[in-house]
Amino acid sequence: MTKTDTEAIMDDVLDKYEVQSTMIGDTNPVLEVSVFDEKDIKKVEGYLENNLSSQDLEHYKLNVFQWSSDDSEYRENAQRYLD
Image (cartoon, rainbow, N blue to C red; front, side, top):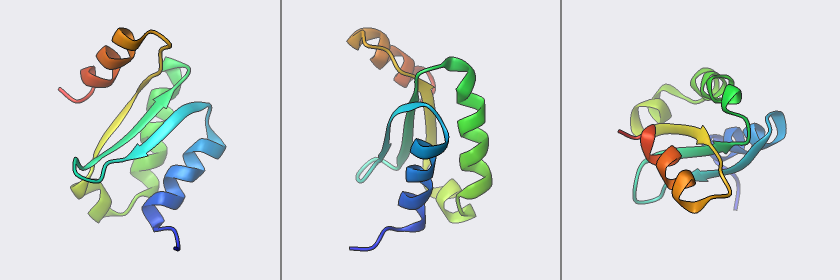
């Protein structure tokens, strides 16, 4: 199976930035990236906005947030940017 452009760009994020994880939503159209350092959120958002197609930007909601080892804090951080 070949990678889509969207998958390749999300993989590039893993290579270019210090991120904990990336996820492409199948049923929920969200591109999710959890970063270790909060100051990287804007950098990752900018990279995605500049490299994803206009169709991807219309279809997916970008959710870049700070990762936390605390489950409740992680969920809170992830949800904060979706609201």
